[in-house]
Image 1 (tube, rainbow over the protein chains, first blue to last red):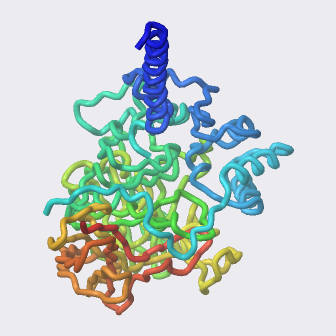
Image 2: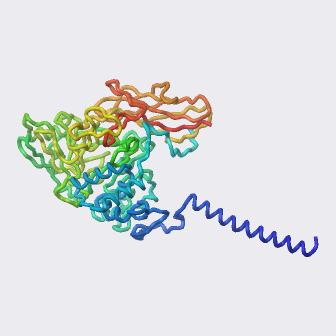
Length: 152
Length: 404
């Protein structure tokens, strides 16, 4: 092998090593993104974790404080729908436009909800777009089973 | 939602509640919650870390099937279903229970001490299941907290019989119902509104097992379950068992308190097609809960070695009735085999079952469990009749098993 070829070889070798190095880092990042997309492993755990939640913080398309999806209408939903009950009650439910409107009327009639005016359409649109009704049939298959070895 | 995830996502409204009320009564001894730092329901209510928080305002928390394996459910694995905000400043020394209503002969007030000393005390294991347990499976979906299978428990309740108190005050011939009134606060903060005020017909009120309880599992009732006093009507939707009990009205008509009327805790009087609209006047009050069972061991997802048999166990209950037979199937209901079934410790207590399951070859199985009540009614394998509010889902419980 002459000097020229040797130089070339070393160059390629260096390039290859650098590529592998960056590829390894990228893979590590990717693995993290899959298993821990919020990098929560690095977050400080402790007594102050609650007080530190920022009112407007959005992470991975989710409004951290309420757990609601970040989409048009979010602020109107937060302002009108999380005063009396938790956003968790909203997120759990799946209704079409007609049933959300009926639910709002019921809350106005019995639960002291105020008139929503133009905001009603914004709220119902937000809910039906971001939390659509899913058909489950008469009985859904068992899903999300976490398998484990059982010794008896 | 898992605990850590919950902590990350819990809203500041949860904080407000914690500061305002629950934190004051955190039950686990030696644990002092710090406002603004710890609205963690797991610490506040002393819950098992695998409990699932459905809602934090008001608190709605359920167990998972495998958590309910104890014969008598301990506090840390009992579902919590609150309708309003847990009351503030409970002082057991000044707490009273008042009996009034159109059909009372003599209105009376009892202190906790009166109740404990004037009447004979009784202890029963009583099954309480949320009327909406299993709601998450209904299609089209029903409004409300999306309970899966864990809104049921069977704890030991100690107290005095409601019928002894009703006898002490006297009730007129026209009495048809009792209604409870409690100290919890409406979510809107409106003090003129009751979050919930339900009740039972006189026939249920006068049963031996219907208690005014002051102890659960041998200790003061935990705050989330109604400290210091709770009406317990086993076998009926748990909402009939009013927490933080302050007053009972003997009514000359069906009690018309909050969540007795409209569609709350009612199902269509006549069966309807899924999604059908039902008028309020065509909805009937739920009384006894239907026959149901849970496989509490093993947890779903068990992988076994080939050739090993699988021991299963769980509980079965049937509202006002007794469970007379318990079966399991490993072939999606094609064949059924009997389980061993114990008698209830007392009326309205859940019954324990067990079986040894042979899995003939490698592969995927589901173990399905089916209870039959003393009137011959069994659990359906598909969802029972659809109803607008998603109550009474007693479809058979299923766990997934693999043999390799």
